[in-house]
Length: 168
Length: 146
Image (cartoon, each protein chain N blue to C red):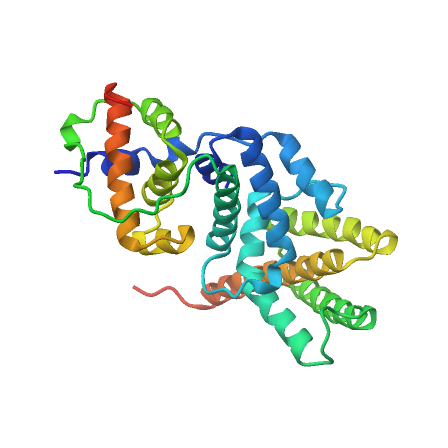
């Protein structure tokens, strides 16, 4: 047996990640991004964002190659995209409300945080418009749509289970 | 991610800079993320690349280049009497090149082919450096020659 060190590390892997960066690091990152708040260390939102990154890449690819060539969305394009996604969000929120079930606390809290972030980003966009704020706004809407889709799926599954008669 | 960067640069202030640069760089490069790896893996790779750049800029010690085999100098599982803190301290005492290879393999989970790509060395060099780093680590832990 010559893997004593490897096995020891594997067994105690988490203990090797004990260092935590100071809060000032996250503040500096937020400041550098031009945001006045710190949401980078929100694990749940990063998780949600990670799931949606692929969608964002596809979105960026389509918007940047399907229309006129250019490094980013024009203001008009962005306005159209925002209208489209807002309509999607409103439609899905209405669907969930119609189902009469908003009891999932983590879902409600995540959605509220994202809405709050969106408001801050939107203000930032008005004061200091930039590509990175625009991208963050688009990402925020895509993440919200994904959360809403997940909730709708849960509600649909729950409804299906209720419809299935008990069998044994 | 902070720990990933810290293990390579071995300095808190530099690790903070690495984390900051990596996050900003990732945000500005979102369109380059293709989804062929998890977002976390993509971000981790950015952190590692930034950290490697930091130790390359130190120029006090070149990253591994030699390419000859060194026998594995591992411990028997039952003969491993050290604590996590002792191992962590010994890893931090390793030279930059050894520490990078050892951390990438042992703690970050990359294989030698991936480490070769990250550090710009051959796969066999990565393997031999890993074995050398383990030998050095053993010396540090057992209070042998430094």
